[in-house]
Amino acid sequence: NAGVTQTPKFRILKIGQSMTLQCAQDMNHNYMYWYRQDPGMGLKLIYYSVGAGITDKGEVPNGYNVSRSTTEDFPLRLELAAPSQTSVYFCASSSGGGKVTEAFFGQGTRLTVV
Amino acid sequence: AQSVTQLGSHVSVSEGALVLLRCNYSSSVPPYLFWYVQYPNQGLQLLLKYTSAATLVKGINGFEAEFKKSETSFHLTKPSAHMSDAAEYFCAVSEGSNFGNEKLTFGTGTRLTIIP
Image (cartoon, rainbow over all chains, first blue to last red):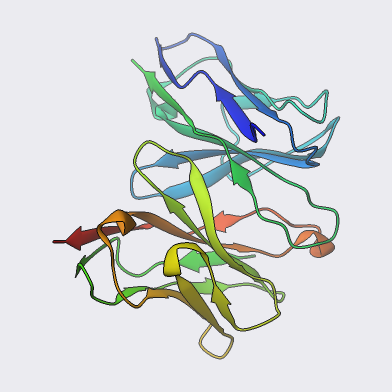
């Protein structure tokens, strides 16, 4: 059981470039999330989705976009990379559905914008 | 709105000593509380969770946490530290999907160092 899979693991971008961080889960979870982790700041929610076709902003959405066309996939798009987007990005999923569930996390994508 | 405060960004304990990592929360509804652990260059792994059943929750690797409503706390403890416990620990709160908010809000983390 692969769980939550993120690709790539590492990436260096130049200012102004764009890229998509991929996230896939094989647990048939309804809820999916994107967090960024900065030193000393914990994890901040960027976007989340409660099901295919439904997405919503989290705490720090500026500079990012998401889509959720299938239950399994939740890609995160950076359109014009900026140094402030240098961070470690984590995708997570949970089953939701009216009961307390835990979030399962991917291994992370370390992004550097230069 | 929900929030989490973790006191102490760095904690050092000797191998075999008691581990105590502090977490206080704020929530407008009865919360669900979690402790996650992150090893270097890894994702987050669930240690334990509080779901309004027993107030003393036991997790993996010998960790446990006690929910104290009067103190709005959910501190993490382990009686005897092991070298393999060195990691970063995150406390998180959720209001649960019953309230339309299963999103996790994380604390800023506590890095635990074990002294041989």
